[in-house]
Length: 154
Image (cartoon, rainbow, N blue to C red):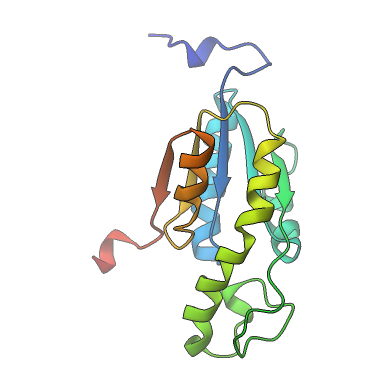
């Protein structure tokens, strides 16, 4: 049976924002979701950082997905070196909490970018980006949370 989404024309009525955490294991599943949505003619906007842009762009080449880069905070007040924008670049796992908490500093730039987007039906963001719920409430769209933990580890 054909659904409404199966029969959408090239211009989508739906727009979804995806915001993966800056770790490959969290990003890859949301890239798969992006392709599924795009195959259903849903407009997809993905937020990331400049250092992660290439990985996402390469994965979604030949698609209509939009990618918006947000600056990763440089002065986080932690021992992290500037330029680290992904967990695989952390010199020690002890820096993970500081890395995750520093993403909150991206919220003002994220919200400025949201203001310039067309209507958003909903957002899927990583559980480590907890502050995106505040942004979704502020802009009046639902936020679904993605937890990248495997079922096996539960």
